[in-house]
Length: 174
Image 1 (cartoon, rainbow, N blue to C red):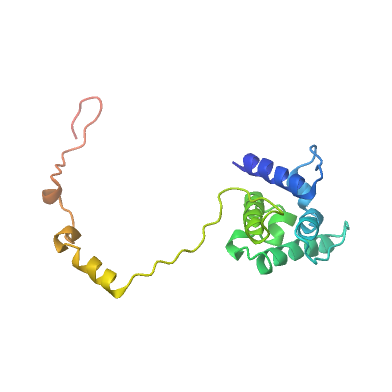
Image 2: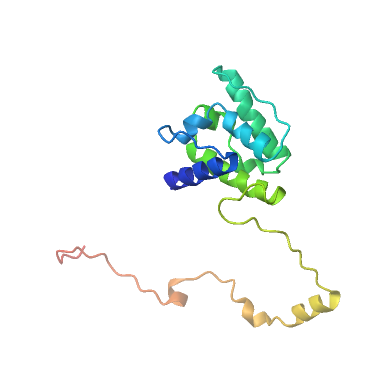
């Protein structure tokens, strides 16, 4: 499953940035500096996001945090759909990072239609149902209380279950 997620995420990033990533390197190793993620926000979505290319770990973690903040505050990706900085930087949870990229793509496609495409299923939209008092009354009157079922606990007698002694496959009873 992770390889399929990685393949889809790699294709989406390459399509979004109009750049080929190094096929010899692991995708998450290339994302570890946070630069590619920030470039997606800046170049594809027009974000005013600051990042710096550096080999210093704290700078790379700041880049990753900048992406996460942009995803949550601007694109409105729910926090439960996003990875944490250590998930990517320390490679603690690769699958969560890939799922977060998929989720980010869906929310970005919804917020910026035409700029990026979404990966995976389309986001559902709220469609609240409003019923009049008359309709609610009709619904209540149309339910038969005999259809509710029973609240009694099932027993051997009510379920017609018979228990016997265990049998040994060799034929010996015990």
